[in-house]
Image 1 (tube, one colour):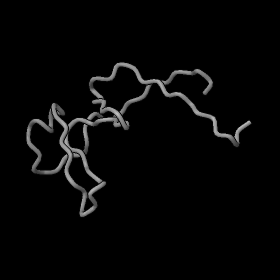
Image 2: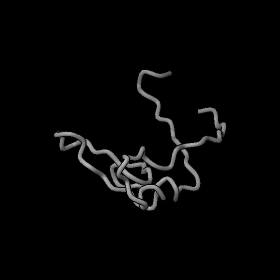
Image 3: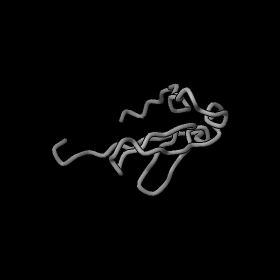
Image 4: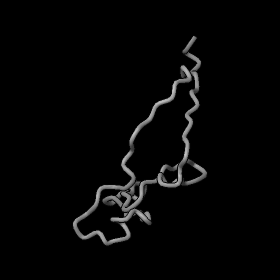
Length: 76
């Protein structure tokens, strides 16, 4: 909101299962597995992704991220 910049560290891969294979360890792929019986929830394996309603972005391919704030009608 104030235009400041921050450096941060974000883990690049999802937590691994004991039986995960090499491609997940290297975070060279991302696969989604159903989470329980809910058809709308999934858990990732491998490289972390950021998702929007129109695209997927792998964390290791991002060079810069900018967030835009949206003021609500309640804010002055």
